[in-house]
Image (cartoon, rainbow, N blue to C red; front, side):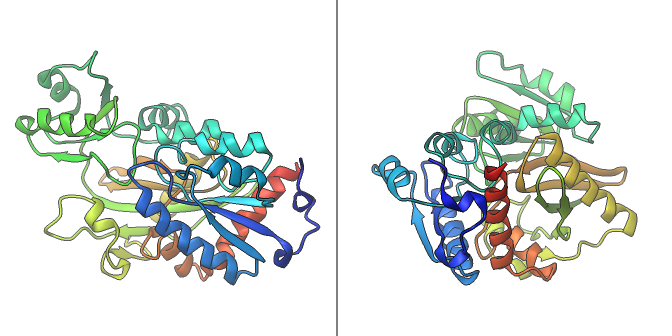
Length: 325
C-alpha cells in the first residue's frame, strides 16, 4: 500500500519514521550509534514518532511490515544494509527509504565493482588486483602489479575491518589471510601517498552538492585511518576545510560528485581519496556513511552551517519525493 506521506500531504509532526540500525554485520555497534544520533536529529527536526528498528531482531519483518511507517531512515553499515539487502525488503513492503536503491548499494559495497565503474567514468584510481582463494596469484605476481607497499582489504566490507597496511612483501601473505577472515574476495591495492581527504555529497539525480572537504590527520602512532582512529574526538583528526589549493579543493568536490553518479547512488554518499603529487586518487565511496557524533558527515554538515537535524530531514524528504515519482 502507498502511504499517505508519499504525496507530501502529511506534516512532519504527523509522520512516523523507522530508523533502521543495528543489523547483522561486523559494524552493528557503529550502526546503533549512527541510528541513535539520527533518531535524535529527526525528533529535533519535528517528526512526530521516530522509532529505532533493528533488522537484526527476530521480529523485524513483522515490525517493519505492520508498523505503519511513513519512511525508513537506513542507518545500517556493512553486510545486510549497506549492500542493499534491507532496501529490497523495504521495496517489497512498500516503505520509502533514505539512500540508494538495492543495486547501486550492492555495487558501492563491492570495492572491485566500484573501481571498474570509476575507471569507466574516467576517474582516477590506484592499481590493484582482486582475487578469491581459488584464483589467488602468488605474492611475487601481486607485487609485480601493485608494488611492495600496499593496502590489503576485503572487497565487501566496511569501517576498515580486515584492512592491513603492507610495507613489504614479507607481510603480504599474513595480511591476505586477515582479509579473508572478513570476506571471500580480497583486493590488494597499491599504496599511494599524499593527503588523506574525504568529501560527502547530498542530493538526487537532478541536483547534487558537495559538502566541505575534510582532511584526515592521522596520528603519528597510527599507520592509516583504522577503526581506532575513526571514532575518536573529531576535533583531533578532522581538519575542515582541508588544506588544499583552491583548484585541488574544487577538483576533490567534483570527483566526489562524479563518483556518486558513476555508482548510481542517491541521497548521500562520502568518497575517500588521497591527494597525491599528481592529483586526487579515489579510494572508495561509502553509500551509507557513518552518522555517529564523531563521524565525518555530521562534522562536514556542521562546517557547512547545516544543522545535522536539517540534513537528516533533507534525506527523508528526498526519499519521499523519490517514492512519489
